[in-house]
Image (cartoon, rainbow, N blue to C red; front, side):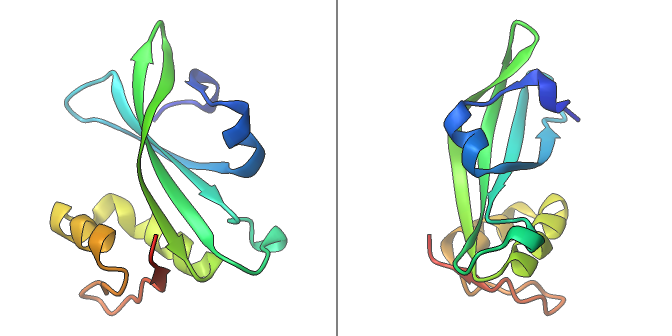
Length: 118
């Protein structure tokens, strides 16, 4: 896992989002994914959408830099967003592709994603 102080995050992203998690590549130690969220604090949740964004990280000079946004997932409520975040590490590639292209996709265990189009 990458430590927060090892990631260089532009100020405009820090102002509106929180770091939810990081995932390291099991095969390339200089590549990772930063998972950030907007409107994700249950106590500060405002009506609207909770958004989870995935960013590609690349290590240079002992720091990780955001190379690009990979995907954004929008949810009708914060609970559904956190449910997705919990399921994300265990999703198969097929499930993730289905989630990216079909907001109504439900997991086999009956979890409703409550996701909206992005």
